[in-house]
Length: 109
Image 1: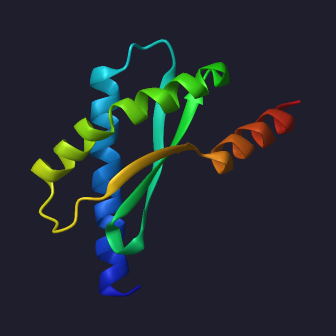
Image 2: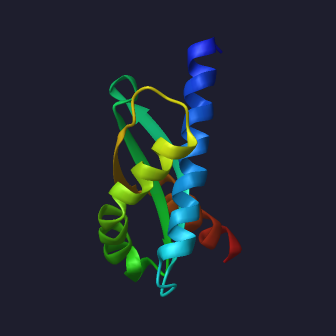
């Protein structure tokens, strides 16, 4: 692992923690929203927040909620992290996590 990828990984983890705090504080608790991972793109200019939502029927509203809270999460990232470029945030369902849950359910049967 290079120094740069270690730094990127650390920033991704910190953004995930900040976003999780905002979700915990601001969500209406009708669905459980978990930030499973964050990926940085375009040399840190963009960050994708991957989420898992239970129940799955709340996925669309969870994505919309995160898109409404983008500026607030970005402001917290700006305050808490000492990084030059504050990434533009977007959110998507973590399909890998969704597939893992489906496999777990099949294995239980």
